[in-house]
Image (cartoon, rainbow, N blue to C red):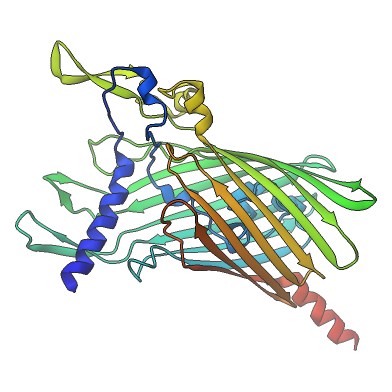
Amino acid sequence: MIMKRITKHCLILLGFSTVLQHSAQAQSDKSNLLGQINTITTAVPFLSISPDARAGGMGDMGVASSADINSIHWNASKLAFNEKKTGFSVSYTPWLKALVNDMFIAYVSGYSKMKGEQAIGASLRYFSLGNITFTDANGNTIRDFKPNEFAFDVAYSRKLSEYFSGGITLRYIHSNLTGGTSVEGTDSKAGNSAAADISSFFQKNIELGNKDAVLTAGINISNIGAKISYTETGTKNFLPTNLRLGPGLKLKLNEYNDLAFGLDINKLLVPTPPIYTQDSTNSANDVILYGQDPDVSVASGIFQSFSDAPGGSKEELKEFNLGFGMEYWYDKQFAFRAGYFYEDKTKGNRKYFTLGAGLRYNVFGLDLAYLIPTDQRNPLENTLHFTLTFDFDAQDGAKTDKATE
């Protein structure tokens, strides 16, 4: 039983190590590239995982949804549009629950509005990979270690007009997967980096079909930062720099019922792995057959990501994934959510439905999310993802009412 558990954890670690490598596959005919798997991999992929249950219940959609406590991850510029002055939330998500019971993602987020239509926020995301036993080539135990990663964010948002706001987030990233253990004779180390998000948000009250409505739109370019490395001399790997944009619409059906929809369009802004072939004059060297050299700077990688797919424009379009979600509120106290996430089969093949629910009572709120994969297994299947929210404005209001009595 112990060996089985160790084996599972080793497989998990091996899976994460693949984000440090670029795939290579020789092809002789460009037409054969269409339909083949050519995923884009980065370091610290935990930064792309939905951290809160509200967005998690809406197909991982959040760039243009109404502002809330967890806006820092999806679009920090929404913070300035929050109706409440202060908020705080705690989220917890078991990871790979069907395989192990000691991996999880924890997320803490909060914000406060200031004078001048401004807001500041901060968040901490922590990813625990459980316990792993490292062994040498002979199977002798070297040490036990608990790999972990975390990111700490500080965000600032400001309204630029009645309808527009802008935001910026600064992020520190720490990823310790090996605890300095020597791997095949090479000393490893924890990876560290810094990154920034730049975002904008639009919100306007309109009338649609004799109903009051709110039209929204958002854009967020996240994780713009230095490459990360896990060895002193090893290859440096891109962060998951990501473009997220989309529209949203909220309808006020009547005094008690609200219905909202939203769409997120995502694209990783890192180079696509090219297709290599061996150099006919030197078998030790690889030559790029199709695509472009991925060993470029961060800035070059962002611009190159729109035109470097080996399969041309058809493959470039496949690198966009979609998250669609809806949210229904009754009397601003009970919510039901649903959504769908789509990713092309050649770029990761993540396809799943999501369901969610929400409850607000006085100071407290609870959000739940559940994921249902449709094409392949998912680390979050059969798992309840939950978020607790705390509305300090509501608490202040309750105290005022009590004093009035």
